Length: 245
Image 1: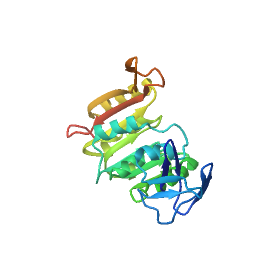
Image 2 (image 1 turned 135 degrees about the vertical axis):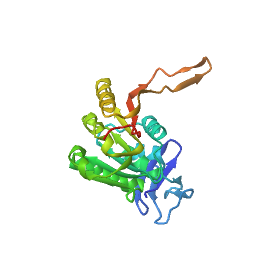
Image 3 (image 1 turned 45 degrees about the vertical axis):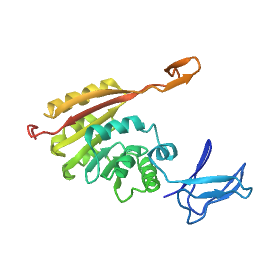
Image 4 (image 1 turned 180 degrees about the vertical axis):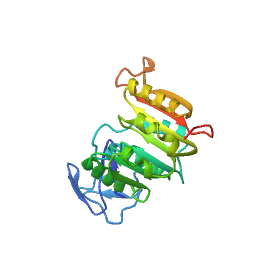
């Protein structure tokens, strides 16, 4: 995995053995650089080697669109309990942020991306995240493959045709398994809820993700007026023993 070199308010993502020319001098990353070490440019300016964590991957992945935000990923993990040993089926890979996070949680992820170029970028991002042994990026349409996939513990969807896949959730999820659907639009969320109910899934709920940063100064404290608090809608549902197949 590539090391992250940081110094105050700047950071660079480099592979071991790489060379970078900056205004602080030429930085050569040793082939055996480990997290916690200090690396100096030829001008004596120091950078610290840091191990990549989830937020670093979110910031440095090559993007093919708007990735799911960490706040949404946290809800997916928290509400589905996805973790080590789980089999996760994901559709709408995109940049691959969600798949990478789930892989780093220890889950085995099979993710589908229709666009071949996007899928290639996601594969490279999985390499950067160090999860190629846990995340398989497949090029194709999940709706055309559901009959041959077997069983999964968690189903995560970030696609326009998510309701069609939700309708097949009873054929994909183990007993007690969860489906999580992300959408930036409330109309698509309503369709996902309808599909979940018609499929006989239980514990159906939808959440809007809103998060506000706080500002603190000498005048007082209040939520920040900058930025957008809303990111999207998440729908969760569960396959129970009463779910029909």
